[in-house]
Length: 77
Image 1 (cartoon, one colour):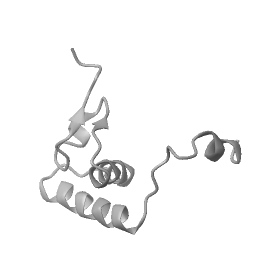
Image 2 (image 1 turned 180 degrees about the horizontal axis):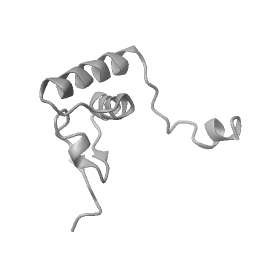
Image 3 (image 1 turned 90 degrees about the vertical axis):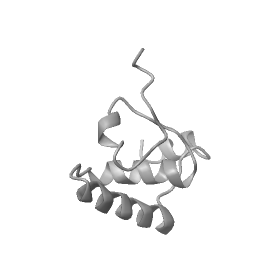
């Protein structure tokens, strides 16, 4: 499984490099400033989406709205 997954998703996994990690840290700090502390993994997800100019798809919009504008919950009608 550990060897199969990277091959299966090759070219479709976005890395957390130093730029994304730095942005994630800034988002984490911003979330604390506005009183909506987010989980570190959520900060990395948000940073990856923002860095690559992607829309973040999630059911948990409230977890991200303090730091990210381009969010979509496709399960809401």
